[in-house]
Length: 130
Image (cartoon, rainbow, N blue to C red; front, side):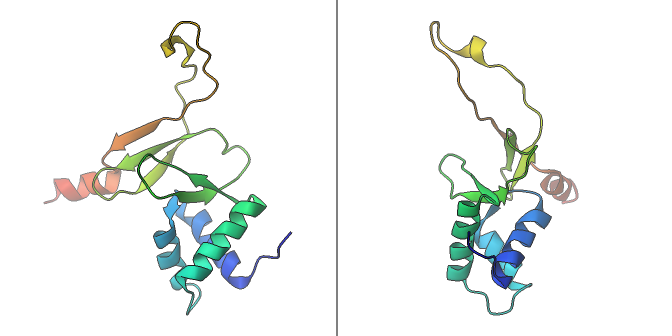
């Protein structure tokens, strides 16, 4: 197992503190304030390493670049909300449950993924004040 460098520790901390899935660019922007001189290549290299170690996991939304979130126990099966205005993605820790009744007759549902879309609280309040 690879050791986690100062940069890797900062990147993991940024992802933890964000408490929402982050794009690589967001990880870079937030890490830059913690580690001076960090480069985007270092961010990508550390993200790859943290993925391989199982410390973080990918969040894949259709037509989007991967986002990254902390891989913690109890954080396994969950869904996501994406804001139309700011494009940020947030965790949704509720699940509507069994979708087998929606599958065609004779089909077996083995997994599902649900993405909600709308306006986040911040974008909603910014729209209301304008």
